[in-house]
Length: 346
Image (cartoon, rainbow, N blue to C red; front, side, top):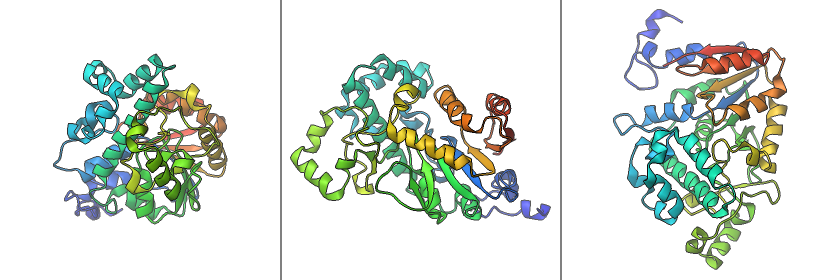
């Protein structure tokens, strides 16, 4: 790449020189030698978008839902009073001493037999991340560096895993004109598979999602009743459905969200197991895995290790794209027989 170009204004419109903005990412992710790629995405991707889209506004940290994403407490005002047990957790402030995801994991484990509290927590996560998604959608993704990278590498991308509840990856894929569908979502078809083993803000039980069926259901059992009706996680037929955007702020009949670190309960769900199986099939067909913004933190570490068993002993190049790639992740991949390639970028 010519040195002169690195000193020119970055094409993303940030106002920075290319070498201080998108060049490190473009250079790190030069995967032209790869004919097929699987993406593996953590919440670092959402952090990157927030930093790009919300310049000059309050910082947003998607790993801190209990801290109101370090943004605006008013985001939660319209729904948190309907979730009294979660409101009590937020008011207790005990979680401030811990990582938010670890605090959620511990809270969920403490009430493992309480259907009401667990359901409230999942609804809280679905609606909190819905508010985050709507906040991030105030600006277009089209000039975001990751959207441009997806577009330029669209022919190599065979599929993706997203551990995020939000729809940032899906939005970037759409803006990059890459057709996709979420595995286990019965009302999505075509394009590359996107696997979401932790669920999504727009997942609900199938009978409650069809436009006619949902409207009838909401008339019979009105929205106020849904707030006080508590359910276990859906596994009736091993499928979930995606809500229309217009319904995102309506409480989920069943929020198909897997709280952090709940691996035992998670792996009992057929729609989650279908995603794991899809990952095994997908990763067998690619010659590179690209990990973006995945911290290998305590809440996701065991799950990631289990998923990567299917490539144990295979010299699969694994590109780790993160401002500070974690040594523990690099060491695990090396011990797993893979070829880790850390790419720090700013």
